[in-house]
Length: 264
Image (cartoon, rainbow, N blue to C red; front, side, top):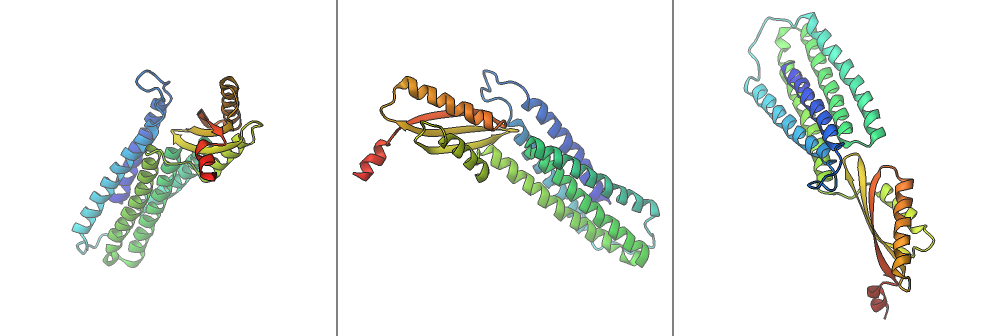
């Protein structure tokens, strides 16, 4: 139960960090941060993940040092079962609430936080089962509490590592989901005077996305015409995909000089 309590304490810091990150991420862009402060969410997520991993390792180390436990005649009181059972119900309810909210907002931090609650529910369930077995089978099976603690540690490490990798991916400007990228590509390629979409990079920043797209237009087109087409491409992407915050359109001639030389 101690390891489960430490995990619950870590949840307080996790939720607080996510809340603070949302407040920072909502600050408007300024001279020092022309792209805004949306990365605060991923930074908070990665820092929280490291904190949870360290806490889990400490709990695991302390459990192994005292394992197997000294024989005891004490039986866990009934109220410990009530606490563990209540923890399962509360954590699972928090998971369902945050996973729905995270998916609606497109927040990786909220989704990761939701899965953290799911892992907590499973951990609390392991504690509940171990306490129940000790009460039924007797004090000589008190070592089950240590095994449950190690199971809790394993679940915590798994969820925290997943959160760390997810946050790091966002900080490293990983390409967005293939389906989302392809939908943006089709929207741009469908424009009347766009001949081809050459490059398309979509990166997540906080709750939104930034798009860098290279479109090819007729080489005989004037600068003014090309400029108007680039704005049309940007407006269409922003209109069709509300989670896209900004679009940078780069124009290239069609056929591209490199393609022409290769064909020759």
